[in-house]
Image 1 (cartoon, rainbow, N blue to C red):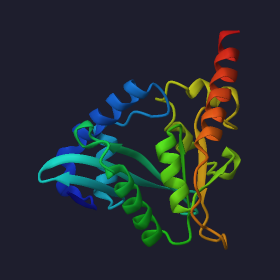
Image 2 (image 1 turned 90 degrees about the vertical axis):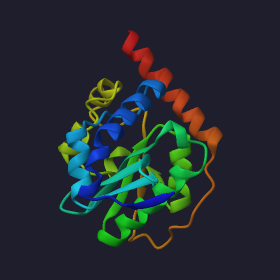
Image 3 (image 1 turned 30 degrees about the vertical axis):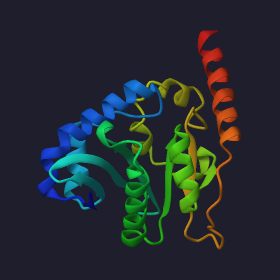
Image 4 (image 1 turned 45 degrees about the vertical axis):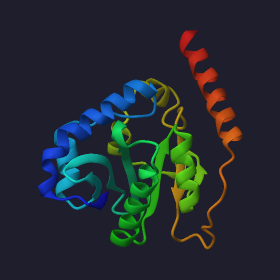
Length: 204
């Protein structure tokens, strides 16, 4: 398995990356915004993406987006092809894109929003902390990226203060960025409370 910084030679994988993200969103039902092949190509051509290949077969992907005059960067679109799941590949890709972010943008705060417990665990191990959305970038273009998520109405109803996703942040300026063990029960309870609260409001 080869896990490398993507470039223009990987444009041919844009469609399968887009399709894999879309199918994963359908299966999970929440927390994943769709990305077009054109959108993926832009991330491939600027050296801000990691791709995993098994020979010439697509295995996984994740990309970096820069916000707030390089004060914030997001590691987004983490996806593993169904044929390569449950092998620890997502963790390797996540680590690679995190290291690339730290190398290219050493002073930037790295953040992400997710509903997935597996991603939360990986973030914790890298030194991320759960935070409120107010601690993330206020760039409207970032939040526009959530428009294709089925829960975007929740985000708009709360004026971008909260959603079913959990915000997580790595701050390089913090003196203590030690990995922690994720409390799965606590996050599952938080997720259940959010779902119950928002779905109840939606039904009313």
